Amino acid sequence: MTQAEWGRVKNVLRGVVGENNFSNWIEPLEVRSVNGGVVTFEVPSTFFGNYVSQNYADQILYHLGRDGHHVERLTFVVSAEETRTRPAPANEPAKPATPSNSLTESATLDSRFTFDTFVVGKPNALAHAASRRVAEGGAVSFNPLFLYGGVGLGKTHLMHAIAHELRASQPQLDVLYLSADQFMYRFVTALRERKMIDFKHLFRSVDVLMVDDVQFFAGKDSTQEEFFHTFNALVDAGKQIVISADRAPSEIKDMENRILSRLGSGLVVDLHPTDYELRLGILQSKVAQHSAQYPDLVVADGVLEFLAHRISTNVRVLEGALTRLFAFASLVGRPIDHELTQDCLADILRASDRKITVEEIQRKVSEHYHIRLSDLIGPRRVRSFARPRQVAMWLSKNLTNRSLPEIGKRFGGRDHTTIMHGVRKIEELRQTDSSIADDLELLRRALEE
Image (cartoon, rainbow, N blue to C red; front, side):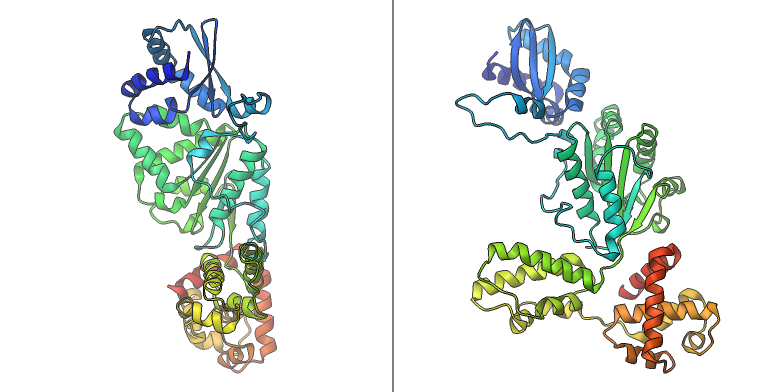
């Protein structure tokens, strides 16, 4: 059977199974061979071949027969396995021997988001280690892995990195990565087209399910119900789930308690706001990448340190600023110094200026811990006042441009060493005490709104 003959049959099947099913399940089929009444198709994955065999084999056989082909059975081979052993025909370029997985390929994975390009620092070290562990494949002691944090802190980067690593090292696994919006769209489409059986089979047959920005399920009762059952089915089958959100499970409003309980039943990891050292490391890594494209441009001393200090809330903005800086310097033929940085990034620097005051922080912390402002600033050292006071010191150090002596003056005239001790104490606690880490994140978000 020639490719032209198979193309003719495919056109008939298009009208029989519908456009969506055709593009998803029939169009990717490629005829490999016809021998003794058996047609062998090349497919992207084992799951793909099993699904076509169960759902479309009878229709394919029927229409092949109507087209004059005496076929009794269909078989399927996975293309990635075949390309490792089959030499390319003389008139056909060899296909790269890379693993292929239809489910992973159906999602959009950014080739830049790998573990190699993820800069690790104290704020994201645990999230990186947990993601690496999942990417190794096999059973892990936590399921699901729940990653959460603000915009631009690396959640999606780690999600993509896990998918890339699994795809490269274990191509036999079906890894499905998608956003919460995509999950909802597929669910609604399946309801509308009365194909819920297909939907359930697809999502409950994967080896690894990865859902990004799960907070968007909030308020979507029917989607939550289906996700709950999908979650349970996969966990019961020993399959891995990776979830991300912009907040901890307990902070997601309008989500059923049973789902929140499931989301929090594995390892919940907070990607903390970046510190100065991590931001500087990210910039240094990106400079190395940009230098390959702009080999004649050199960044003057102090520019990266300036950017790491001034652009502190969002890594995406930080990386975008550096990209703009290199492009602008190349276009105007000027060195990347402080003057060029100020000219090129004036709008970003204005938007990134910290406008939070120490006084605002003190008021917000007092309200959060239900203590009087006078007790927060005052001399009493009882724990109920001392710990909130240290939290306010840490926030003042990290969310304002005030020096330690200036912060000390606003805390009842305390010495800068006292402020330094308080900041160091909270920095230690936020690594080990989840309640302190949660308080800091809630307060930071409230102050930056």
